[in-house]
Length: 268
Image (cartoon, rainbow, N blue to C red; front, side, top):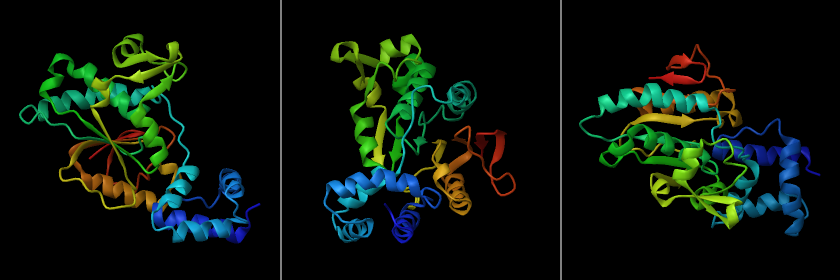
């Protein structure tokens, strides 16, 4: 069982390096790491953390992050965002960027890929035959290499796709494993660029973004970290750009530089 001192060490490490606040999650931290630590022959959590901090390759640190960041997502999650994106955001962008035909969209908590692929399907639907004239590639990042591998593979169970509109399922997925699983088509896959990225690092964008999806990730951050991150996103957006956060998340109305459109939709 993890001691208070060991728990403090792990939570300080995660906070300093990734901005993730685990201070109230002792049981979760213990539950997710205990078996791994035993299986690898370490006697306690401190011994394991010594290895994490000494490992120059960063492999053990990656494993730690993969264990401690939950990734629960599914297709059509909080669909009202995609609806708003298609009906309000995209018509505005189509007009605004008619000359450059360049859209810059970032999904900052890509997890196992459902969300960026959803955005790509909405874009395909919206632009239709004109899509080939536009650069609609989506940047999709996550801190966890494990989920990004799944996202890149793009294979989902029939259960995970059950809420998808039938025509999207037919058009964007190929049935594999005798119909028990579906793989994202290459056509859709090439619309999404997956990268590992820590939201606490400086944003590396050369141009400003038109839309940022940062949904269900700020639950891991304390208020101060959240405010700093929201400011960074604000600075990285084009004037008039949009930020989508999870429907259960909130931004502080008094301190946010954003204009509030709906509780989880914000505009610069």
